[in-house]
Length: 260
Image 1 (cartoon, helix red, strand yellow):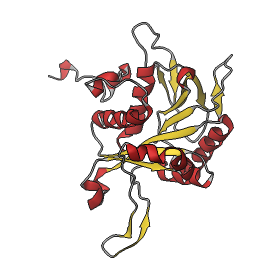
Image 2: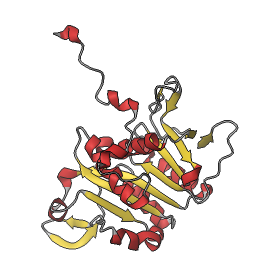
Image 3: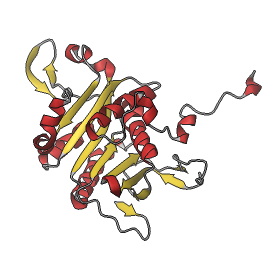
Image 4: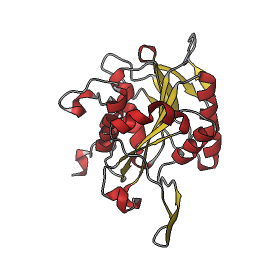
């Protein structure tokens, strides 16, 4: 369940809600970090659930004037009322046996909160693309019917590419197609849930491989910014985003000199 901070009177009515999928390369989570850090979004609450592996750590967005000793947990909500924007950051894997329970938790919260639209940032295995996907941009989107009615024309104007359906039996028959997002975590199930419950959802995803996925995160967030205009677009797209201090330890601490 969502637990707001003490003495907080929150209303998310008509807000845009952005959340990551825990997917290949953690690209959605890295992109979410960039949004929270750049917009300096305050934390307004957290999710208390047994669907996520529990964790606690220091404030990942601390600046020199802040206290890094402030604790963060596995799933926290940040909000900026001026932009009517709420962001959920998920920092640990979702337990596989509780995928459905976690999806139900989020969709229920979306409905009770009155969000105007939901955007999920996700990723999918690059090595499992088919031929038509290899020969084009790695960025894709999906819209639920409720979201299609609102922004479908806008994304067409931006020349975004919709996620293709692929053959169920490739090389044998192309008549039967399915939505296939390998490495996407709860993305496909969450999209299906929002379609069946008539919730306005956009999935923005990128094909990538595990490794240093910081460039993929910048690629994904710049793509989203072309639509939402969260920040101004300078000549150098990467310069507009403030990298959080926690990224300095993304691959662990440095090699101890004593080893040599």
